[in-house]
Length: 243
Length: 217
Ligand SMILES: Nc1ncnc2c1ncn2[C@@H]1O[C@H](COP(=O)(O)OP(=O)(O)O)[C@@H](O)[C@H]1O
Ligand SMILES: [Mg+2]
Image (cartoon, rainbow over all chains, first blue to last red; front, side, top):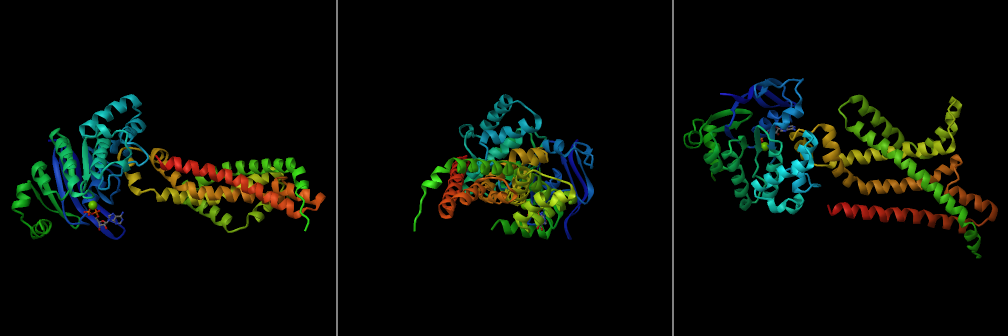
């Protein structure tokens, strides 16, 4: 089996605060992993370390078999790792279409015509063919998040990271974003999703990871973690989010 | 009270010439000031401690000293060190250095006001710092910077009257020269004031249009 991402003994601190301690994680190609855990447990930090938005203090991270070192071209690395943010972070001065074509054109140097063709295909895929000319502020949260997914996909990444992609949405808009993510999973995309949407985790995840205080407390199939949690902290957390 | 504006009307061509020089000084010092300000802001935000300190010093010194003293050092002070600048060079350069320090702070604040998520989103797509700055952060910061920049442009246009002290015959100095021969202080100064107001108003209206145009996007 090829591991696409491997984090070994990763330590991440912000000043005196140790956010990840001796953190180990392996992701296989095609795997769908859901990370759950209380707020502040380091879930976002794990994702941000994978695409090097955060430098790590010690340990090492491999991507597609290659260690990430000081010599690594971070832009070339990040191109292969799509990221979807809790607050969408769409470019407000660009239309939905321009949001999607921007990086392929600027980073990869793809021609406008080709980039637009691909962007239209992706926007159709996320169900937004009729919104291509709209600016982000003219779109609902759910629509914005789907544009953000299309934008990340436009770079043709090997893996997609989702950091609480539905937490900022009104409840009635959560479904459309989860549906888009399920379709992506069906296409075989490798995905790491930080979410508290248990139904999504049950349906899509190969593996669920429960994190607390910068460490993996337990992991396993959705059934194992949700139905038969072994650790008290997992039980307590699951109890809390079910209420 | 005998006010006679006909004398001033006769001198209007001279005053308009003064306006033109004022616009010239303002334009070039703003252009150069924008270059200094943009460079200053990028240095202020750079991780390089040397550039950062230099930009800090620049802003600190310029903002903490009067613009008139700065111009006098350039025009009357430097010749003592063997550097002789023409009045126009000293005036434009001095105003540019001055306004550049304020513009540094405006642009720095504008860039910092752009949501941090924008840089992260662009970097996560593989853009480098320069690409994120020019394509993503810059345009958004520019929009934020417009109102304070308009303010700064107006200040610079008014400050250009100080250039009269380094013997540039712009609007204010033209007015003074007319007063030497006509002794019509009130009439001349009020007309000079109105001319400044008109120049600034045209600029304010244009800036307002630009701002509204950008807001629609
Ligand atoms: N840029 C930062 N500076 C300082 N502390 C941070 C920063 N980002 C995150 N942290 C801290 O790291 C811990 C983990 O944060 P995060 O990974 O965002 O947790 P989660 O996503 O699980 O809620 C928290 O205690 C948070 O306060
Ligand atoms: Mg988080």
